[in-house]
Length: 183
Image 1 (spheres, rainbow, N blue to C red):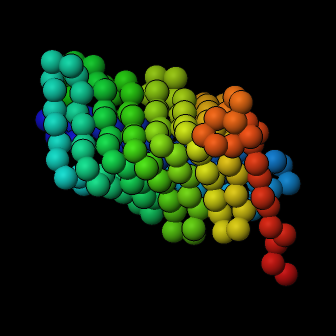
Image 2: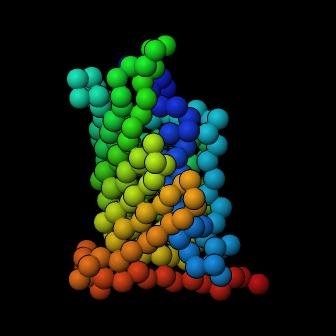
Image 3: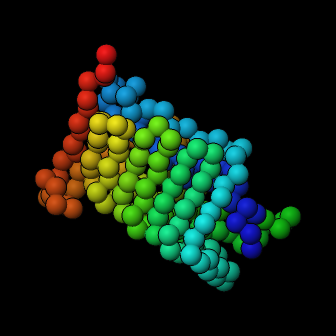
């Protein structure tokens, strides 16, 4: 089962669309400073990992160890990436339902924008991305921190929330640091 057959460009682009959250999650005044991540769904998706485990009966394909994903200029790293798919469709392909990255998830662009967390899930049908556990969004000196990030790619709505009761060592609040623009 080849990755390219399982992974239509739109699904991979949407997972990599995590990076769109930098522009969406910031307050209106800071959006220009944190925007700029873009994916190209027509670009091929390249995945490297230490190993690949396909469990066709469970409809999963899991890339394990030092996972690297590249689409155009966008990069993603994680310890593990699992693709959940429906059984083969007519014509031999499979439909992806969910993509789950876990362990040290980092999405980056060439202009120093990053989104990091311990895990990220992309629900293909609803076009929703969820990223969690000590989420950090950065561009240069601008930083947003929270416990969880939710993004609806269909509406462009994004929400960063803090952990309840100081989850993950924080005080339960979302924190933002926005540097003034250089003259």
